[in-house]
Length: 293
Ligand SMILES: [Zn+2]
Image 1 (spheres, rainbow, N blue to C red):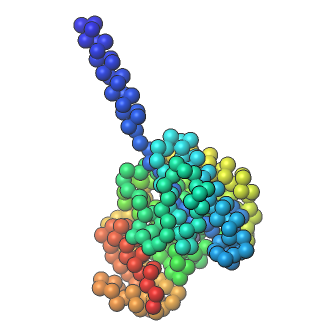
Image 2: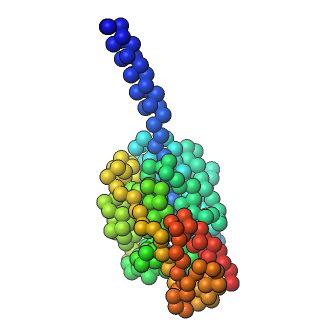
Image 3: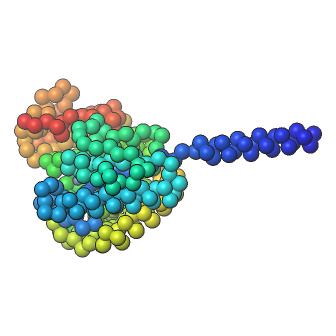
């Protein structure tokens, strides 16, 4: 009998250790640039050939590296990063933490969330910004900057759209960095998540900045806490089917998009598409965003 107990104990210990080794913790990082510390203009910092663009793509890479480090501090075993700014070719492939994998360039059906699926446990937003028309927000715009978006009747910034894509797979957003407005928006939309305010917007193109070093410290620590608290945070799941309303500044874009079957013209500038889920909605948005009438 004693012998059987000993054998059973060995089997149990072996199984536990195998399970511990198998335990994966996959983290998805979606990165933008407008919310990176130091950025407040597209012309000088945010887009090539801006005078400081090369420096600021380096600073964006450093903030993403701080987030990757925070994820590994929290026990991550895999990190997937998506570059989601401009032409999506900003992060420096040589300087990015070599433990991560990187998705670059457009177009992609899931846009800033390409590659997310139900095998991930947490999503992190770095360098994010508020939506089109929001006040006290650096470079506030939504996706192309030519549109505003509603999902099931609610106006959402990119963060809301992207969190709903992750929510489709049951994955919560646990952390966001950017100015005070997008961090407040994210907490209102997603509940008690972690955030790092790396700048206080004083207008569309000006802000009081934290230093890059201090910003990286807040990001690393906040990402770690967010991932550790992931089970407390509810994924953003929208009820199906999902109504996507897009209002375009340019009326011709709404006109051309309304030629597509199943698309309703709500008014001159606004179209309505009803998708089965956020995957269909994102594919539709991505197609329309790439229209060039
Ligand atoms: Zn951007």
